[in-house]
Image 1 (cartoon, rainbow, N blue to C red):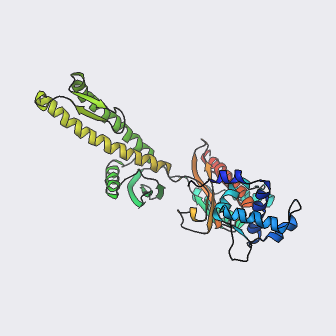
Image 2 (tube, one colour):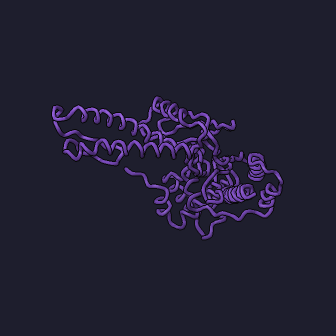
Image 3 (tube, rainbow, N blue to C red):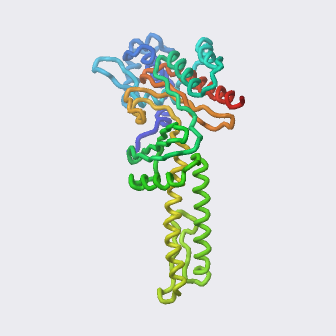
Length: 357
């Protein structure tokens, strides 16, 4: 049986169910205490009995959106319930004037160092939200001294970049399916041999250039065999392409055999370079930005916590980092979300100011 997704669950709720659900979540986020049917009845927009509210809450519990901490207690939202509330029912408040002034004050400094500036912003964000602030700095763009890949799980890998200026940066990415630790080591060894003096983007450009060169060499050697009908392409130009020899071995001249041997070597080199180029592209993209609630937060392994992050951009509208807050799942999302969003916009403007001077 296919479980309904969050959007479908929200659509299945009638107006009364939505209001009960919203009030339960808002009351829980405000007080931290389970919410009973009698307390909801007093503040409800229409005259309904506690029994009616209780039945609605039971339906919401059956849908997996509410749960009872104890048999006789009221209800609290589940992790899925919080996710639906944040994605579909959250009413975001404007950033308070005092909050905006505290954040803006971090900009009124003559400090020109990016790390110090981000540290000031992080401190202000932590003070305002009473949570642990998180600031992902802009990716470093300098000559690489060393690259290392580390497998974290089948779906997660870490690249450690050591730059020539001594800066060290870790980036998490999703590796191609079936990639082994030995293949990662081989990729790192290959990149370290040619990375001297190049940035990540320059290294990726060099890899693409070598891939194009190898492809041209293969085409030149294979062209004569294909033209003479001794070989055909299968999936030409794709990652799974193959050159299939059609003629008998004794029909091939010695030169043909030498060309085929060379083509096999070039194909192996081409495949390796394609894999490494994909590694580099994933390395450049790094970790995507999203909001985690509770056990969704695998990156930090903080079950029972929420991570609210917002990206910030440079003058070219390219995402270069993110700021966020880590706190309990019982977070004042209506206040925290706009503060994090405003902080991200502020950091983007501050970085652009530094870059224009």
